[in-house]
Structure formats: structure tokens, C-alpha cells
Length: 181
Ligand code: PRP
Image 1 (cartoon, rainbow, N blue to C red):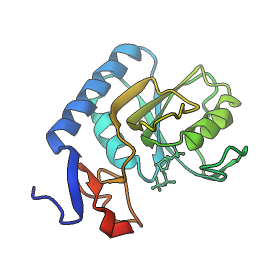
Image 2: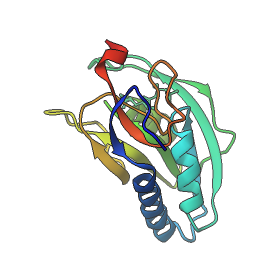
Image 3: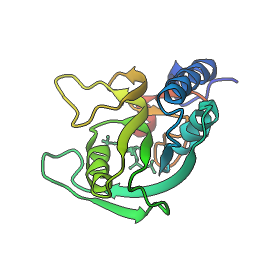
């Protein structure tokens, strides 16, 4: 596939992404073989990765979806997470894996974990396709499964958007600054 003209650099190609999903799926299969995990996609960005990861997991599982908005992101204030679309599944006693596309500040995930912990799952872990490494910043959550680390750049594709565009690019790329500045 040719590169989109708004993309400056490809960070993860389709082939690299496929290998990442396969590796993470194998790890989860190993860890959850007899646990019938519930894997949860956080709408919307994570759905592309979720679809690939789910098909790389070779043990029985169930799926559910959530959509949350977080407020107070980017600040140190104690923001809240508002659930727009909640799970249909009762997670008490279940082994839950939240699937995210990217951990940036980590505030969304941190608040989501607080909400879900109150529902008493047997276990609660995060599978993040990307973790953004921000110099001097220690995120509040640490995913058990990580696809890759990226520098502090504006990335799009493979589910991630800029102004709702580029989610359908099959690779992960850095957006050209002139597109958003
Ligand atoms: C993105 C992404 C994470 C969150 C990460 O979602 O999918 O949920 O931001 O940011 P954080 O680590 O700084 O909290 P977004 O709110 O853009 O919604 P979308 O998935 O619909 O694009």
C-alpha cells in the first residue's frame, strides 16, 4: 500500500503490526488458557487493534465494548471518567482485559480501571497497542501487554485519528506537522 500524502513517516507497517498482534495474542493465550477472559474494546480508536488481537488469541473468550469520555486530561486535577456506553457483561469474578489503542497520559485508563475495579473482577489487566514515551513523565498505569513504544509525536492510522480522519490507514504513521498546525 502506498503511503498517504499527509504521513511523514511510518512507525509500524502492516506486517509489523500483524507480528505484534500475533505476539500479544500468544502471550494472552498462554496466560488465560482456562480463564475464559472477557476482552473489552474501548471505543472508538481501539476497535481496529481489538479485531486483530482477538483473532490472535487461541483460547475461549468473550467480548464487550465500552465508550468513555475522560475529563481533566492533561492536567493533574482529579478528573472523572464518564461512561457513555457501558458493558453489557457483569464482570464480577471475571478475568477482564481492557484493550486500548494508545496510552498517552494514561488518565483515561487510570480512571477506567478505578471504575471497573469497583465491580470486583477476578483480575483486570490492560493490553495496549502503543505506549507513548514522554520524557520525564511516569504514567499512572502500566499495561501488562504492550505492542510497542512510540516517541512523543502525533501518530495516526490503525484506529487512531486526527479530527476523525486516518483511522482506516492500515499502518501507524506520524502525521506531517503542516496538517495540524
Ligand atoms: C484516545 C485513546 C485512548 C485515550 C488515550 O481516545 O483511544 O482512549 O485517548 O489518552 P490518554 O492516555 O491521554 O488518556 P479518544 O478520547 O481520542 O477517543 P477515540 O478512541 O474515539 O478516538
